Length: 513
Image (cartoon, rainbow, N blue to C red; front, top):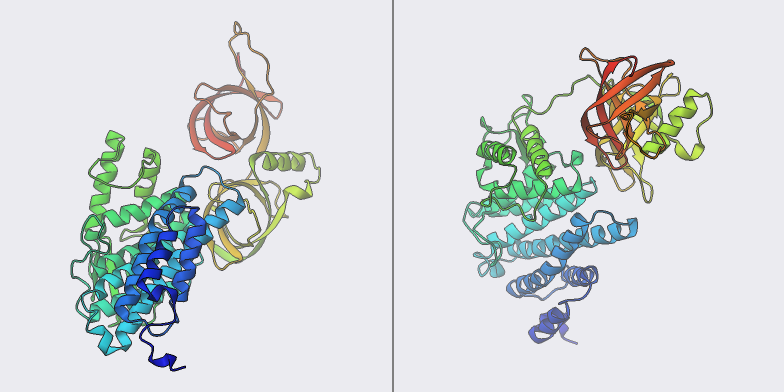
């Protein structure tokens, strides 16, 4: 009775002594289990009444700090693992996404009270920009984790980010130097945190592998002070965001009408800095010690990621090499090198394919370079970037060979997949290794390849797909095509997938010695 005049809310974290015990109990143990507990505590704060704003922020901060070692562990386990079972991957991903979503919502709850209660706001003025920055940082982490599964991105993410930025901007605090956390290496601003989120959102993460998404986030963060955001469209502006609608940022077009609610942004000087870093990494084959990009990454991974950011965040986005036509196209799809080769071999022998090897997709756009298709996600799905596929329209004579280059989850069940065609037609061939007469080697099963060139090009070169590990720079094969022998000499490994090698060979002569 008379609970409405109580000094403290009916919540275990309202009492400092009880809160300390709860926070202490969150130390150590299984990272996923601890994060799940923290999420429960954060969500319990969203609707409880009676918390003073300063105390609520203090409690959220304590939970935030307690979660840091656990979320770092989950991040390392997810990004660093070479292979994860579906169950392991799903547990790690769900735990991380739930945590960052709940943390952002808890800090947003503090900002809601700041907006609505003048008595509370006067004591929170100095803390408000830091709270805004933490909201944006948590939303940025949620964006990264959702990008690791290629979307979908919920509308609340962009609307919440816009509301936090607008609050700081309206209060004249968006450009004030602040420390988002006491342990931060340097100062930041609310605008800088917002720009990190915006730029990552338009950096086309749907064509990056998970390790590249992690690295791209770090690169954008490292060069974030060189990003620009303005009220007016400038020469360095490549994208814009509408603060009034809370929609996701988009690329600027000539037809984009100006609006007072628009904010225009681009990577500006960061582009030249990224290009400079790219040059150093290529020339020296190392990452300068002065550039902190987290754990050690392979040089090819760093180069590919930096090149991607330069391409996709520039003034002129990458153009398609072919016009795409829209309209539904039914595709037969096989995946995995061995299943693809077996399917094509059966097709050439006029044998039916094994039903277990074939899926049916509906492509919504197509061009000579590939297809775009929307498919239903299945548990333990094989669809991932770099996966080799065989594709054929039912009326076509040959099977083509392609690779998954883009994945975007439109919702919880549907993926939009972009397939790049390596060749519109493939022919199964047996590659007999050519050895010196004096060598004594145990005869092994000849490699089974897929010929991807109808004829040699002007340089006498052809493309061949082989099983992973079958290519060597010293490889010399004899291949029979239309009952004629040809000598193939290895030139270059173009791409190494999980289960295939895509390589180029020189056709040296028709009659091997």
